[in-house]
Length: 68
Image (cartoon, rainbow, N blue to C red; front, side, top):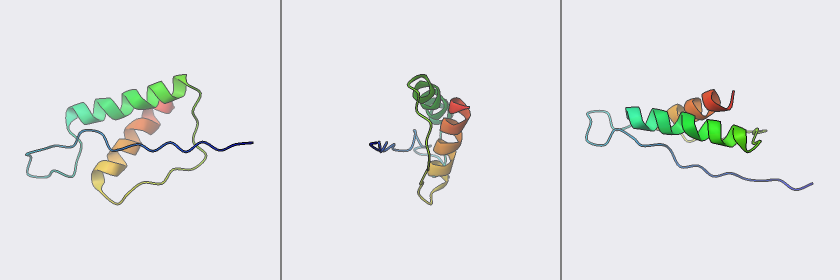
């Protein structure tokens, strides 16, 4: 049995905003769309590791929503 590692960069952050460390509206849509695409491919993560930034958490939250 082989393991597959998926590396995902955070979705679009709020460049130029007072709080850059959050996703833009587009970033939220991107992360959820990625979750939907991963689900279509049969991807169901056994473990998830994310960075400490808010945009990392928000990206994962969108992906998780799309996968469910």
